[in-house]
Length: 497
Image (cartoon, rainbow, N blue to C red; front, side, top):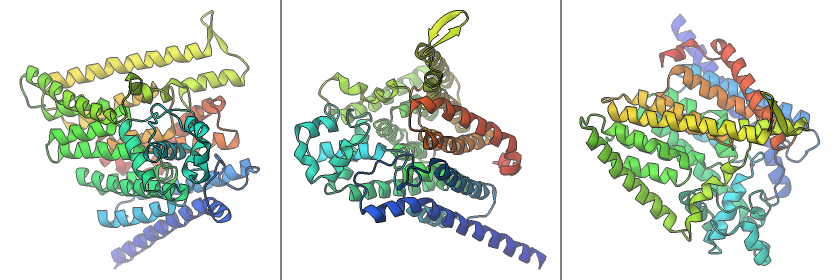
């Protein structure tokens, strides 16, 4: 009898927390709803880093309210992650995730304008037949100012920070942008909803794929209800969530179907969105042929599937190709310093009214110092990555867990070498998170949530590289605090994963 009562009380508490999570989520999107109801459209939206979208004056109070809401959501999320039996099966979880994600559909992209850039370059190509790898939104509008009169997508795109930049994503991303804008009938509101709905569907597919591959509901909970992921990819509509989907598909065919060709194909498609996924190619091929005794045959297999991968990439680019400059498009974004340790170094100099530092008796420009550090980390990445590939080539019967853990380490080093870093890049790690050790899983969760909290520095100040050092330092401090307290926040039972 006591057991039945205890189970009833536990279920009651769990249902209460589920309801509370939904209520807090609704509160989270109220400022966006007020803005839409007041204006009737998102055309002209430019109130970035203002949680109270209609009021940019009360920055401190707005930031405190946002932090309180996000921290409560994070605490409830950690309860779901830690608690056993919150969801009985994947079907129940998917229904709940769908309901919560649907609420985030109403959230406006108030701390990222990337979605309007996606729309603009998509419209430029799908409606006006321009090649966005060679012509910018701003250039076309300057030549044809009348297009903004009846095309709200182009009008909003012209206001975007990136409107003077050609496409910085791969051809698959551009094709997706073009397809979605083509069916939006030049309407910015319809277009945003389409992008959000697609991201929501992909989010649910990712939850299902994670469960399908691992057969553990816990990992789908970790991914599906993470406030960081819900806000960045349903709320702010970043396209990295599609990359995660394609990587998961690649792993699914590799692990569950034992088929290397579709695995390589999905990796090639993913690379056509964000180039970092190419790092998985030799790892996937070498793992698939791990039982092949002859090293020469394994090398030949790598060459074979490397050529197939390359052929797919070239086909992707063929639709937009004019000259070789197209292949450097995705490097444009990383030529700048933003939200990374390097922009943090330069930003500190700006705040202190200095551009140089005395390093071992030598005066060094801060930007040069940042470049040297970045190049050093990149060299470390190249060395360790080549070492990993050679190790996989020589060893046999390598376990998937060990392979993906090593890949995860390489991906972290690679991310540290990026001149431009955004907190939503951390989702790259979630594609292989189920195969990591418990400490790495918990650390990834904590860093993702901490980076979202640290991002509020731009709400208090302004979106500028001058404050990137604060973003980095706050993230690190929060990570240390969370790690210190994790025995209280995240139960020791996670070690049993």
